[in-house]
Length: 227
Image (cartoon, rainbow, N blue to C red; front, top):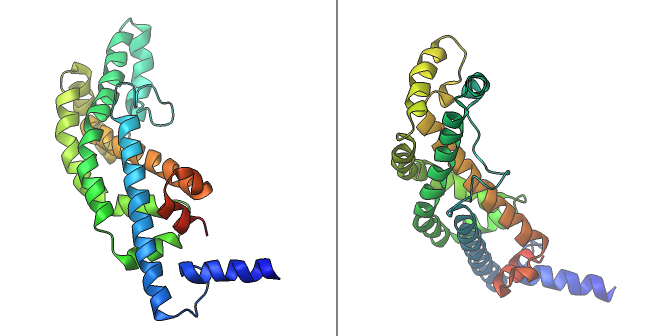
């Protein structure tokens, strides 16, 4: 009985479990939720950028490594049989190096999104699913980050002749239904995959925080996500 009473008291204080709380407690819960979500967003952003924005951050990580677009993957097999496999390898390396070069540019925008979150949004996120923090990030930053990433990706991939050859062939193949429109341009494809990898790693960090908020090393994370 005492344990149930203690749990109810903790939930009431946090504002996450009981509806009937006073205005002061509700205000406190909003402040705590906002602070906790900001901390989670910043922690996830810093971790993802650190892991991905370095040599082999993408290329050496099977979870986010960017593969050839499906249409080119089939052609790659033929290129390997005629001794042109190095061209394929050069393109895969260039694609992933482009992603590694682009990711550090995300940090300022991600941190800005974290710090601008409202208390109302924070409460919704706290009560959301296991990747609701990451989903918030993606909704606020995916489009502007795509704009920032594309020129970096373009500079890195345009040095590989196979990239432009792919664009020329894939552009025609779209009209025949052989290539998805999203995959018809190698630079846009890599930019999209870079963003996918970034949010995947932020999501992994969020899941770890939710699973072990105390272990996250932050009092506010433990307070908000511990209930």
